[in-house]
Image 1 (cartoon, rainbow over the protein chains, first blue to last red):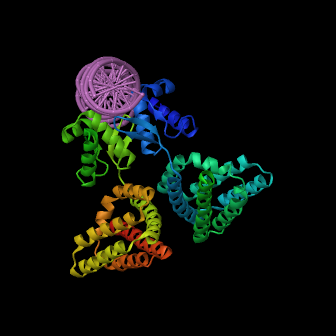
Image 2 (cartoon, rainbow over the protein chains, first blue to last red):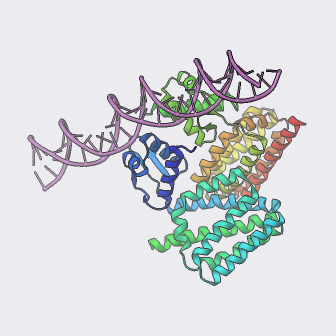
Image 3 (cartoon, rainbow over the protein chains, first blue to last red):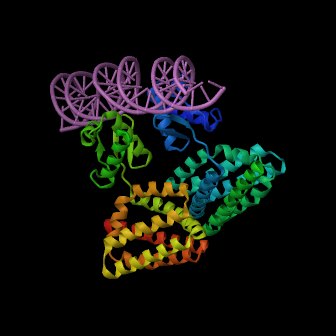
Length: 214
Length: 214
DNA sequence: CTCGACATTATTGTCAACAATTCAGTGGCT
DNA sequence: AGCCACTGAATTGTTGACAATAATGTCGAG
């Protein structure tokens, strides 16, 4: 039986990730009690859990608010993701099975089709699926957990990025290189390809910022 | 004013890191109340905080116990540290000031002296200081926080490793290469040197395991 | 009108009592 | 003996009330 606590945590997490609470917005415990339909005790537990995830920030006697992630922080976070996913890609290259290799290939094919057809949303989904599959192949629990946590902190920025015109055209060949390196069971190449890919995401993040403020 | 809560958390963290609670040992809330001199409320808060740090594990309705870190996990954690500290070293190389460069140099000198004099404990302290200084130079908050968290999970293994005979002789030249690369403001070399260094730590961890079980 | 002291309110922090759950030990049954 | 249901102690989960704190509003002096 799953407790109210985990349910409340999941609901609140989904609400924040779904944009129902904007960055900087204050989270009042009493309000959340009604919103989530649980007691204050559970609300507090949920908040402290999400605080550990870096999704909210709590200040003593001043309550909790949705954490605001600046562009600089977003870049830092993505830098960390870059090296971690590089590690994971390298490990995936040493452990991939033939069956998994085919699956990678298929995702690559679907990605190319999606780009050609201009189906951005579909491409974005395939992107998540690809990165997820690679992490599954690697089976690196520690890196995995951290990557997942970091991803949560970036939903907003990632989302904006996915709407950036021209991104797919840039990232598609990068993805294909990653897939190829893993299929060839070449850890160094896989790490390199993954890092190049995410480095280009960082560049795009920075450009996006310049575009907004300039 | 600092609350009982943070005080209790710090005390408990110190107790676990100091080895006063062994891995796997159960943490009974009532006992901790006496031990820490605070109410159960604060004990719970402390436990949930340390759970987020990965130092303890809580199972619903079954209480909390000190997390046991297997050798495999220790290797995983150190792999993550390897890439993160590599990132940090590279960044340090791009930001180091002349003053900081001298400080690095001095630590390197002291390390060499400590090794020659057979002062292991001193060497180990200098080691922490070096890695800390590099992280300070880099100023990468995100990577920093994660590294710090991971380090906490490994205290026991790290400790055993620091007693390993012959380690200083191996790691000293590695440290010197790291220092040199940062002083020369060569990010790639710094990252490479740092990764080589921590890769050798991983090897040592694995050997240690083989030595224990074989 | 502006500023600062004071009162009020909204919100979070803490507690002690109670409910629910797990776990170990007991005793009856086959 | 082996097994199952049961009991009771130990432990954790949860609640609602209250205390402490910060935010807000009010009023008078200058």
